[in-house]
Length: 138
View 1 (cartoon, rainbow, N blue to C red):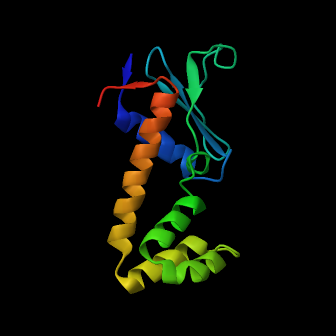
View 2: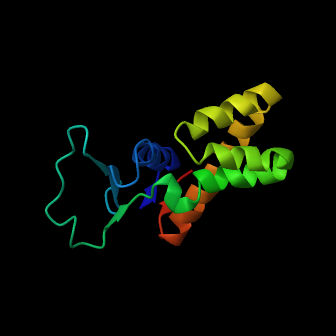
């Protein structure tokens, strides 16, 4: 069965919208249905065989694909190496992403960051699908 990239991307965003292991999205390889599980919200009713069947796959969190701090570090190293130490210091305390985005805004690089983040996310998620034998329709 071919799966919609958009559906997989939305499920990935759900998983990545919270701390790692807080939200889960599980894809049925046979039906394409996605089941959402959250510690904060009502969860979908899960099929009885979801834990024993190999016909379901859990979508990754952005950190599983190095799309969290690692992505920021790659962007900074490539596009603003003079700020590498400053950005590293952001991640030693809370609010790192807000400070990083403030720096990007100050330098006029916020759009460039978003384009980079989107391209890297799409490439990594498509590669994850290929690695997990998930055929995409689009």
